[in-house]
Image (cartoon, rainbow over all chains, first blue to last red; front, side, top):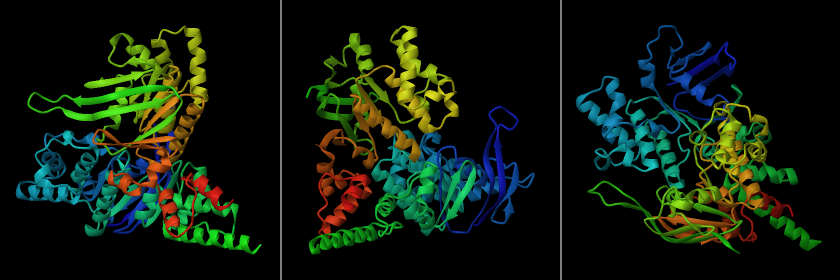
Length: 291
Length: 277
């Protein structure tokens, strides 16, 4: 399912002293089945943009077309859109509220009119898709789970509505390294096996490099880059200037390149970096011996 | 060196309902933290890091064993305020730590409660805000600031109490890269000024900046050593569910390929200097 965003603008508190342009003439297309990373510092407009994509916010001008349907058209019913576009907010576990995990995950699909066996099967499937054991966890209170498990339950609640597009706003923030790894592999599986289109906001450039097909960079409400991860992360100095960074391997190689321009700076994986550094050190040593 | 924090056989349990057994979060911890040092505590969620941290300033008191800060026992109700003035805490979410609608009022909250002369408070607040580079924002409303700026305000609020030690409980978890860099820089500056730092974090790159790393698992301390020694033991680090920093992985890859990277290097700057020496 594709997303087409054309020239959208959004202004918070228009006409008030704190008037802020949150989105400034943003346009992009996302093809079906893509995995898109979104980066930008706090206040750059990431969350505002995401909330437009499932109709929680309306642009002041411009249009958003999801799966061929213009969701900004006046009078458009949003239920269908929200079914198709699942939005997982930051710290989604704060939104858990039911007595049991099963009931919590069922809340969304139930409100979309699902019931009986279909509902039960959907809830079971969603809980299993996020890597939890349904039988073991269904009767437990969501509040007694670990941070990583709570986050998965919250994501299951969105998956249960069977979206075609899944938007995740900093899904791994605050998780410990193990929970972080597990959640990333869950998201990868949802993308690969369930063929979901995924938009993924993160401050972790290593994760973005590993997962995304393309990267959008937001700065002051403007889309300043929209390209492959390699191309975006080649622009290290520009990213630093707007408070962002690049994968650590790339940062190291870029800094080496600055000191000695014979070193290739645009390197994004460990093996290549290791082989470049090894050759560099070896050739320096043999040179020293010859001298 | 003199220790500022002494933890002896600390056991801490969260009491449950009548029928359930209490949950043991800290299980027999012994720990001495030297005055002026910079210690990082890492471990998975549920390993007892935060429970240990809250025991350090008497937010939680031991089920058994003892915690002393500068010789003051956290169990003693009479001296608890003196203790908390000595050891400040900064938490993960800046929004939960800001109490006032104007930045400078928020920073003044601590010293006001200590009963300090208002004229002195003016200087203390200015100094505290300057030390987190937020002097220009003193008349602003906190909710209009970014997460990183709010966290710096929360840190200023703690500095204004003039503590000798600050415990940071995942202070950068909710911040963007710039916010993280700023907060880590401030933490290091505070340490240089002589404040003892205890930093709880999930980011190994941050833990590497400390002089000592404590690894917790199931309420116990399982490793306690210099960063180099901790990350030299790759298998053990993995076994406790921690992730190796990317640069450490690269260094170990290079060592496997016969490049003898010196032992005191574990960050990007160190690598750049080593390779381009």
